[in-house]
Image (cartoon, rainbow, N blue to C red):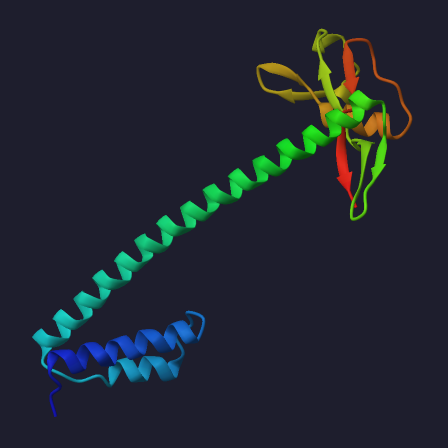
Amino acid sequence: MSLHLYRIADEYRSWLDAIESNEGEVTPELDRWLAGIEGDAGDACDAVAGLVRECEREAEANEAEANFFADRARTKRANAARLKEHLRSHLEAMGLDKIQGDVFTVRRQRNAMPKIRFEGLAASLPDEFIKFIPEHFVVNLAAAWSHLKTGGSLPDGFDVTFGEHLRIT
């Protein structure tokens, strides 16, 4: 028995819904279902091509929505960072390290990892602070940090600055 175009499209749509319900996995059972959909070749072609276009348009709409929400998330994170910096700078201006509120406690806290810069000549450093990249030397700041963490001191030319952040508990 040959199905009409709208019935074929409904069969394929039901098949797609079953895949989505199965978290995108096409099982052997779903493969057999797809192979069992019957109908006029031209009608099947139109039905499947129509569903392809529908899936493509839905994917485009989903990507646009994902981009919208990713932009919103970036904006919200930036707003949170601005507000945290506002609180941190006010604590600093008041000469306080900590404020206890009814709900939250905020405190200025030194960052665990400092910002390390080197402004000297890399060729004058011991080998442990050099990462060789063909054609030029690059100061290995990660090695400098590891050395600092073990209690070592750095050669002249390094500038180590610990920033601070606001912790909300």
